[in-house]
Amino acid sequence: MSKKFQLSRRTLLRGAGALMALPVLEQMVPTTARAATGSAPLRLAVFYTPNGIHMPKWTPTGTGAAWELTPTLAPLAAVKNDVLVLSGLANLPALPDGDGHHAAATAAFLSCKKAFKTEGTDFRAGISMDQVIANHLASQKATRFASLELGNDAGKGIGNCDSGYACPYANNIAWAGPTTPVAKETHPKSVFDRLFAGFDPNATQATVEKRRAYGKSIIDFVRDDATTLKTQLGASDLRKLDEYFTSVRDLEKQVEAIEVDGPSCNPGPVPADNEDPRVKTKAMMDLIVLAFQCDLTRVATFMLANARSLKVYGFLGLSGGHHTYSHHQKLQANYDALATIDRWEVEQYAYLLERMKGIQEGNGRTLLDNSMVYFSSEIADGNSHEHKNLPVLIGGSGGGALTPGRHVRYNAATPLANLYISLMQAMGVPGVTTFGDNGTGPLTGLKE
Image 1 (tube, rainbow, N blue to C red):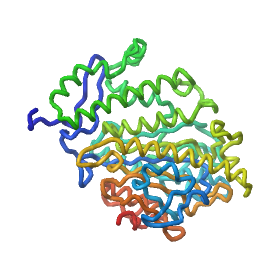
Image 2 (image 1 turned 60 degrees about the horizontal axis):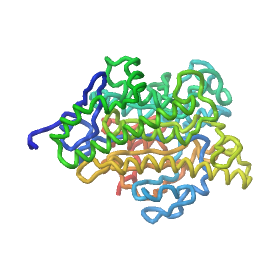
Image 3 (image 1 turned 180 degrees about the vertical axis):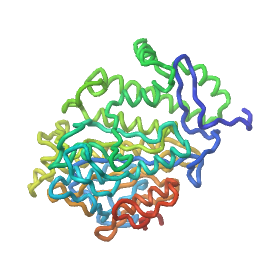
Image 4 (image 1 turned 90 degrees about the vertical axis):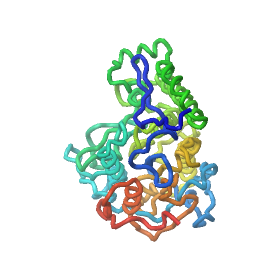
């Protein structure tokens, strides 16, 4: 293999009616937004879960590196040293006018901007921090997609979704501007087609469907080009490419099974309440990992469910709706149900982190090392609608911007917006020193 051989980050595998992006390989020419101490770009993922968290079983007692896993955080055991637990942060701009805590706080979840109370189309919130980052990366033409917005539930598009707050507030966490929510994609098959099967702009949907009808993977169509490329790669890159192809094919099978087994990937009405969130969430997590792995985007958001979700988690042995349990009225049975749901949510987040940790990107770093994966809810306690002491996790080290493996406790009412300023700065956004209604500067304590 020639030492002079280099690949552009824009290199695509080509075949009849198919184009396929490559994962980040060691022989790719460096571009913008790289990790300072590595060869891979930085990424940001956001994992939103509704209705708050039962905080007594969430919050660690120890601080610094001495913290111990609580019952709710126990699923993080395999990635404990890759996670920051932050306590004490508050999002006071999320407070509603009167009632409507869930929708108002979800609108402010990533914007830290008070939402205008309306049931109509004159809604106003604020640009979300993920979109500030996406705009910066788009200005550099860093990736094919500036950002990726995903979720399990579509929800209503108009009308009142929470005590006089319009549905866009409850159904979206990504906002391109005060009046522009960024709609999320809730069909894994559509996301896959957008990222992979429909990557060739000249390939019609009929071509894609014909390929599926013959049981062909997109990998089958680019195999010749891939075979040629393999002759010019080193052992490490060959391993990465094989792992990537395996992941893509496994995901193809997932989304095909979802389409066959249920309505979640078919165009039509709002998905039925009996969709299995286990299957759908796993597919969405795998899509985020692959999109990051082949650098199709560096920003992704995911909503496990919409604000004020009444989803019933029957597979957890529960018969009531999530939002109903969240108004626990200090009943032990409701506490137990909430703790069961919370732990399952953390399991889904842990799955994402473990997948990312398993992908090597050079210089001894993993995809998770080169990422920041933010987990939180719009409120803390669901019964009191508490907007202080929010449940916050950040997985990964952001290429060295964070020191994970710790629990950091902040003073009460420390602005959540300050965390977002730090994340935006870590992602290379220039000149950001304030944000939202109350962000005053970067959050201290994220790095030792």
